[in-house]
Image 1 (tube, helix red, strand yellow):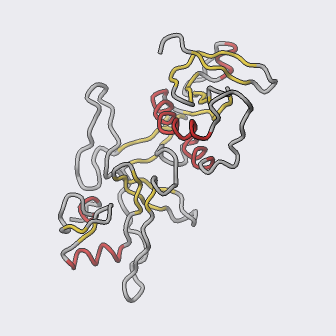
Image 2: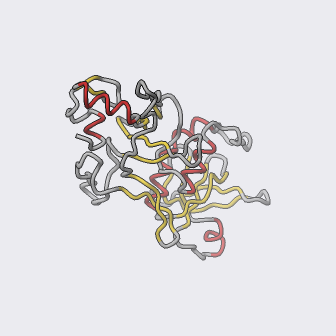
Image 3: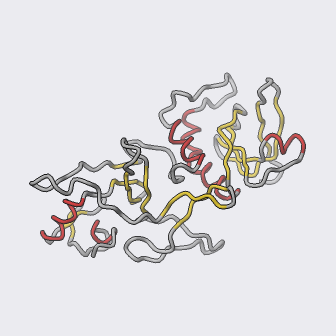
Length: 245
């Protein structure tokens, strides 16, 4: 992407051009404005901007590769939300994805892309035993989580998934790859009680309850994240994916 630039809108109404480190349909990643102005780069800070309007989408703290990865995940969502021409300066304050974008930008949630929506998260109904026990989610082993390293926010991936499978790596760069079976902790309605979700075919699916898992271990028939019924030790059964069998 040699010599590509992005136009930045400044608070005083002026604009300036900045070299783009990555540019998609709607978003671009670049050095922060202060670096463009005076050449003083703050390590681990990257601007993400809606390049059609030049409006900042936020500042990312972390490695450039993580900033670009986040922008890639969100590029199509911003392209759908923003007009294609520089007619006006749109406000996304009421955008359905605004709060989730800010949480992922800050590192408070894993970089998973836009949601929640019907095609981004599948919420499972909480099932309890007849006596009401076991309605809580199974405390799954998290394999994908945000961390702060020397002041930089990053996404860390466990070496193995909960089912013991070793994580795949990019054959060119050696970087670990996100996989079906990754588990992350999300903020739920109760801020003290996280919601565990497992990534499956591009969809985050709520982890089953303790009661459901106990029932499947006794019945000889279990479910997969898509709702199919399989044997409990099938590779894609919840019992296998969570490392229970």
